Image 1 (tube, rainbow, N blue to C red):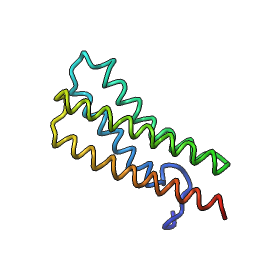
Image 2 (tube, rainbow, N blue to C red):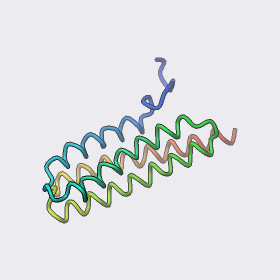
Image 3 (tube, rainbow, N blue to C red):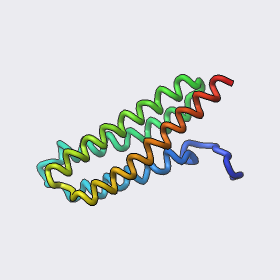
Image 4 (spheres, helix red, strand yellow):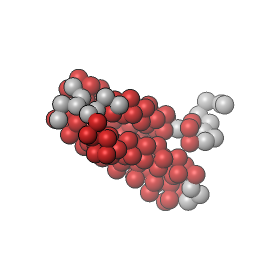
Amino acid sequence: MAIGQIKEFTDLEAWKEAHKLVLLVYMTTKKFPPDELFGLVSQLRRASISITSNIAEGFSRYHYADRIRFYYMARGSLSEVQNQLLASRDLQYIPNLEYENFKKNIDHVFALLNGLIQSTNQRSQS
């Protein structure tokens, strides 16, 4: 693949970084108390996988407005994950340092999603 050539959603940097976050969420939530299986564990996993799913679906849409809408939904799911991780930290399911590492990943994915939205918006206007 040539540099800068994006053929499928897995080539998007936003998807790649969000996928890393999904894997980290799944590994981390394995350590949560069993009584959280249908609470925070389920919510965190669904919200995190929703980020990459919405990026994938947006990438496959024909119209730029549809793409952007799905990228915004991915960003919303990212905010959900951040909120749920805050609760997890405050309930002492994850230590502060681990939360801070999550926060760095989340901030990075936010920036990539914002860039993806902006570049898609620019292409729609040309």
